[in-house]
Length: 240
Image (cartoon, rainbow, N blue to C red; front, side):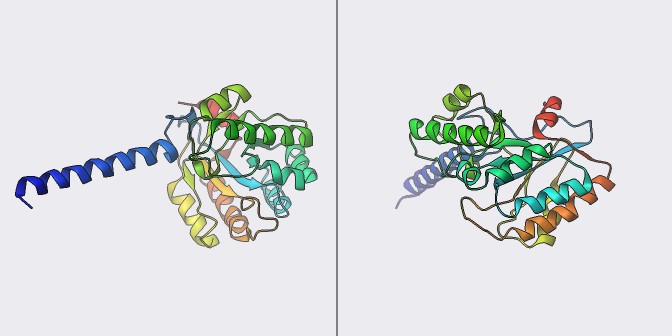
């Protein structure tokens, strides 16, 4: 291989790598609005944060509600339609305790490469399941795995849903409680949106005890630091 061809090959690899990185950011980047409008933080200045929980409702959700009630703070729960059908009473209790509910799809698919029709149908089914169980129609949605794709923009507009990502995610499906708490507390900032989980996709009875224990460490630490908690919709009143 000549020096010129080697340089050309290296340049081609670099361009391909950049293209792949750009595509990954478009699909999963927290600040990306390529496929649909989304937010991941609010403007700083009010010393406010929002704590959010994905993948419920499930058998562990009432324990999260007890902890939130202990500290008298609101949260936002992005619920899966199938799980709402399994546990409508728990979904109602989330709403009854003053927390916000968002749409986290019906079946918790990775929607990359899926058709626009499938995407719209899945979120529509979740919207109906949540509305039927709680009497509340979500105005927020979060894509499973943070993956957005063609069809999200149209679906969100049709259903009146605002996309929400996160400022910091706890990785609570793989880290112990201490590491989850340290990760969140070291990264959270004023106007931040924290992402944790009170379920694991559509698994019936997952172990989410590390996330629950982390919440018991995160919340008092942030309260002591002078933060106050809001739902995502309340927080976005301070949106950039």
